[in-house]
Length: 233
Image 1 (cartoon, rainbow, N blue to C red):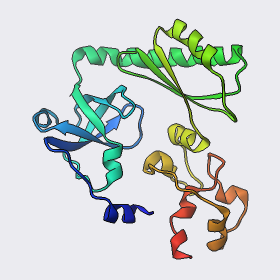
Image 2: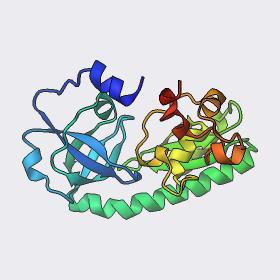
Image 3: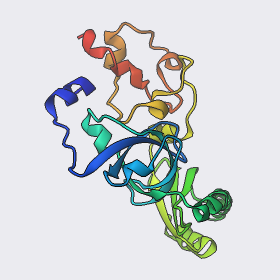
Image 4: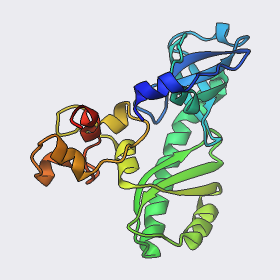
């Protein structure tokens, strides 16, 4: 099902008592819809720094990009974050501390992974605002027993550690980069859901089947092969 079909089939249900704005999260490169209570929206202006709650329950810094954000697609609400408060002076002091904490956590995790000889690649580490919870994104060719790693990391970081095994596509989405077209990869700029892509799509569009031409930075078939496939079948 394409985005157009989704808009036509699914009805967007707006919660009563809420308005929607557009924000940019601290670790993100693309904007997100943010849910705000009607009574709080007047205190927000473009450029205001705020604290939002993400879908994983962690708080994060964000900047207001647009004070009004019309919502047309169900996926916009699915990925929406929730406004908690405007950033205070105390929060601003924490900002640099959080960045230092994440860098230290990355060094510690790399050291422990090497010590335990685990077959996994560290992609990104994200801390919540209070620096009490750390989420570790990693890739691995197979399932990894990281119980000992978490135990040692908790002792060193004095924080809860959540491990999240992600695929090659998700890793590319986090790391970002340029595609073969010369533009930012779709996954890091606007694409939310990964469609299934097969060699049948390559053949149907009479494209050159050279691996360097049809694979992305993640090593998988290019997501854009699915965009015009329906026009060829």
